[in-house]
Image 1: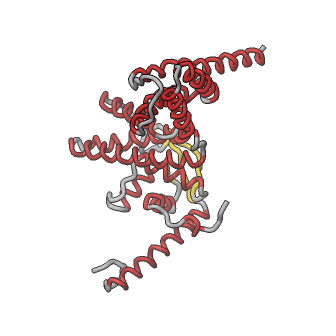
Image 2 (image 1 turned 90 degrees about the vertical axis):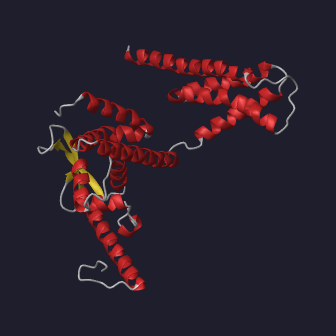
Image 3 (image 1 turned 90 degrees about the horizontal axis):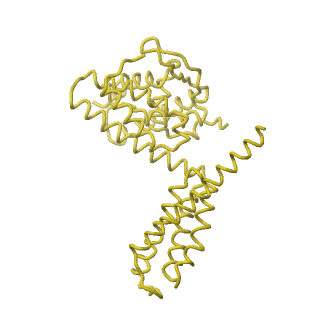
Length: 192
Length: 122
């Protein structure tokens, strides 16, 4: 087994964090091989023992990683559910529009809570992203409403609308939690 | 699977170089990188991202295949995944080489560059 210095270990850990920019399917197939390749290249670069060599090494690694990760994500979107995130943004802006124009905040909650709950239930690995997009789309919709000069029926507070993040996260994680509980219950049932 | 090599053209530089490396026999990822760096005098240096993205595309197109994992005694004890060229991959590499050769000949003749015996401009 190759011996690592503390700087090598740090470099490898940094690279492993960097690998997260790749889609998860690609990471599962090639993550370990890429890590191994990085270690080999890093040790080769360290043999030159100069700041310039290490600097060039990291610039190449960073540039290649972000470029290939971007291309892989584009390929991934073509083969998977590319429409998912645009749909979430559209839903969020729709909820934001309701919040901007409705008289009572209950109208917003009546729409936001079930949508966030369903997303948490259906996409448990994307819960925090869905909740964040839904919650942030509401103040964004307020800003768009201001820019387009749509008069709201009540006083409008863009900053206060950020509070929508709280029910968005609560509802989404309730959905995720319920899915987990039901899954656990079913596994116990099948197991027994 | 598509058996027409022209469907995969043009290959990227990385993909073509990987096919050329594997023409000499099966290699693992790091050995491919070293072989390419040596053959191109360091001009083409494949990092992990570029190398494995290209390998993934070549595998999915059936131009190369995996042939097991084993340690490389020249390096360390880590098990490394080896790749080899398929028949289609060899045909594709040959077709690409012929295409590039024709392109270079056209460029030489249009630019009025004299051909040497090795095919490089004076």
